[in-house]
Length: 207
Image (cartoon, rainbow, N blue to C red):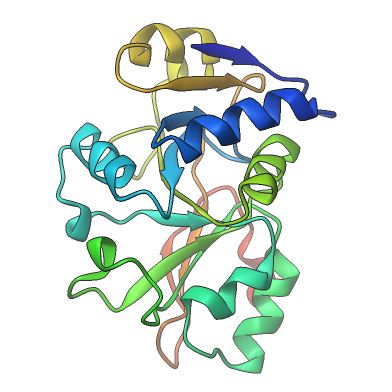
């Protein structure tokens, strides 16, 4: 199913339909402030397993991000962070960044296993934020490509994405053309902040 949404003002009935799909163990492809992403409800074990199969990886081995609507979810899934890291996160989000933080015991066991960190995203995209806010909890998510570098241009076109993934996911949300670059990934799980990937987000936030 391909659902067209107004980027600036997504209609509540459309957001409700997407959230209903997620709550029914659905996997969706949706726009962010970087590349299109594929994700599901963090509380649905069935959907997480389906998402992992689509990525050909075991859930506990996957580097999925938690896409949140605001910073209120930090305390839910992450251990306490330093004031320095919090100031950087507050400056950067919403925005094209993924922050790797220490996970706490609330992270679903299916995802955690032996992993001690979690990636947190708050994309600057009205459609994405509206979906997560209405859902009430994060979306487990990963970029719609197989490398950490530049992706093929067709992944930015929701019509082509739908043609490619129509039979593999429950819904593709058309929020216009996506970006060609992924988020900047910053590992803040230890004393020193490490740049794991320089993407769309500027590193000026570290100054």
